[in-house]
Image (tube, rainbow, N blue to C red; front, side):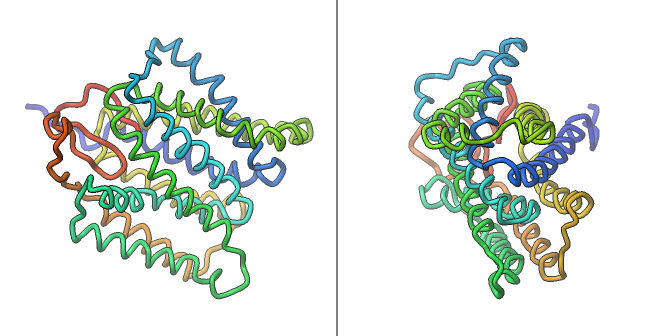
Length: 325
């Protein structure tokens, strides 16, 4: 029997995804200096919808979502796209790209806590330790701001974004076992756009789109095409090939790469306390990366061999297709 190589093209795809998403943190940070953050989200979603559905059609990927998943799809679009992206993008006005990336990476912690509160999962002692360590790390990371006069609103909004993304993860977990991940992303983006238009239209119409120049439009295209279409597609494909347990650790590279890129291209500086806080936070997140045993539920999930792992659902049988986070 031939052994699967330790590294293959899927690992390269995951690394490329982490680089794309890290770059997106810097791109959005620079863009909101010239573009209203709410208008940025609206146009990003509009561009995403304009690209995603034709791309699915050209690729021959079905876009139909089972009717029983429509409520979950709406919840996913509202929480993981409209609210998450608004909080994250507005937060970048008053915090650094590295801070936002690190705090948003706490999403799996919130996911686990919500799953426990709803009786969906049980957390092992090691995972509780990881949660405590991650919270301690965040306290160290923002300690200099809390002790001084530096605004922390951007950091709080990033934490709120992590919380809403955990709601999205729980809403999304079953849909991607029944529908193509790319189709779920496309429809979730459309739902997010529909939610954003009513209160985001004034900011969008009031934005001078000529004045933002090629740099502004380049940022929007990067966020819409590279981060949304290419990034999520690579991520879903990688999970389908390697499984969640092998791919999710690449998510922890995103804040690290964001910090490196921020130093190189945005002149960001980190003191010892901030670096220590970031390291402790990432350690805590790593400790939470243990399979969560599902409590035996009186529903079909127990009979299908589906096991919950952090943000996603992985079939205990060989996966028939990609899974999305």
